[in-house]
Length: 103
Image 1 (tube, rainbow, N blue to C red):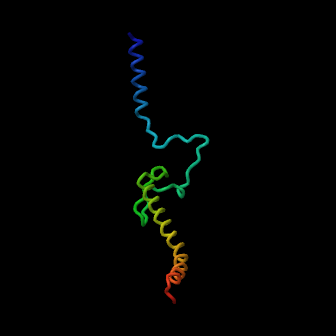
Image 2 (image 1 turned 90 degrees about the vertical axis):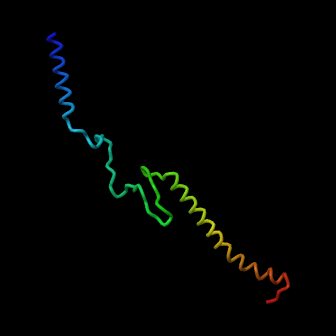
Image 3 (image 1 turned 180 degrees about the vertical axis):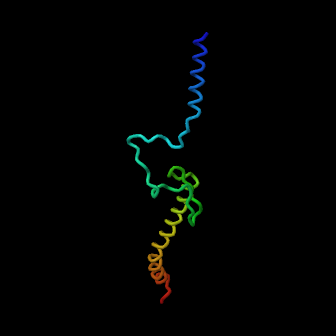
């Protein structure tokens, strides 16, 4: 019976010591841990002319990906129009001559 009382006392003291230790806010540093410089961390939100772009751990979320692809499609459409404009401008006078309109 005395052995049980001693064992309970040891467990009670161990529990009090364990609960009184401060909790760590950061994980322990391992031998191969490299600190991340603050200048290269990616933000969680970026305000652009498109809209707010959201990131999680440096990766874009689904809504951000859709916005970016829509913007790329728009940019490519405008670029195609601008590249085709000189060709259309040169082809128009020759079509008018073929139709009988003299300049």
